[in-house]
Length: 528
Image 1 (cartoon, helix red, strand yellow):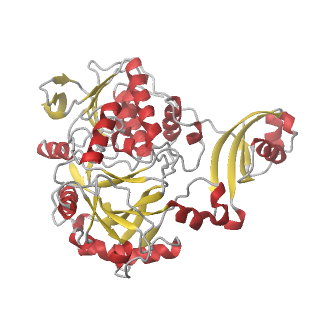
Image 2 (tube, helix red, strand yellow; image 1 turned 45 degrees about the horizontal axis):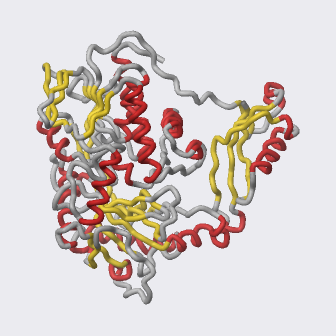
């Protein structure tokens, strides 16, 4: 096939218009195009008077070789090979590999091991999507938390209750494999080519369930409410994992795909003398605006013709500290995301349609190891807990979330009209963010908000709502591993994904899961 880039189409453009653009670029009649597939589609809204889609398309056309030989256009080239190359080998492990955690990293590690015929055993401390959805709805409606089955723990990991964003900055070719598997599992086909793909939490639940079923069909096993509470060692080699119910599973290969909130397991790893290190992360609040305001700010008069708009804002304070928006959820909801009693955390979520009244985003302040006040490897985790505990108490100690209007927070005055009604459940309470956050964080937020308002009109509007505390943007630790993918000081243990400190989102975590599955196969002499 031939790849054609830089095809620009008006937002009202259709399939026939795109085909004409392809034919013109290749200088062939439309009839010569046998087939095509969109490789990438992005919306260019930098100039509001000229908002358009930009396409990269792979085209099957008559006389491809001759066209490529004659055409010197930099936007026309041979389509690269994007197929994932599976490792192959004959030597099989004596014992089945064990995957701990069934978020994106564990899910794709388990899937790849199953596709290679290694029949993994996947252990997930939380429940399947059906029981998990029921437990989460109960929590959001009543404030009654299930500490093992919630927004953080269970099938699909924390991403199951999110916007299902699949954007990533990594350029790893395994990204395509991740998206293709998701489409095979029921995700919309446009995630393969949209520049900012998302699934939405409503569709994502079905996707993760179907991936689970594929692992089982391929000979793997997926167990829920199977919490790992210990390990057995033969010197520095893994011998077995121990479960809370007393079961012991012998294995020579363990993938630790814990997620960023498995704090009790982090404490277990520290007690077991794993090589752990502090890492920087970020914390802050969720900020809500009217989605219509964001649409108008980003698209102007074309807003009514386009999908719900998003944004990404960054700012560096006068003291050099970064503040940025993260995990922006168009037409979404702020959700209760706690996983421990007495500690309150929030996150953002959108369904596929993104048709909620509000937009929300994390508004985060960079936090560095020197802010933790300790050299203990888990000091960042304890810092998270401290702010979550303050947030819990500020709200009334019943998972009511503390909220504050931007006008109050910036001390610029009360909003004359209130358009933004917060979406957090089970309840909200007006509080001061100064009672929750250390001064370096509130100072950074107060400096950043007006600056961001100059970039996105209305971002610092007085009735915009802040909800605390957004504390789970990424893992506060790294489980150190070497170039074999194994833990620095334990053979046969493969830390993976966001919780281990090697990823930052659904796709990058899934890619890391594939990577460690390959490392296990390479251990037994498999090659591509």
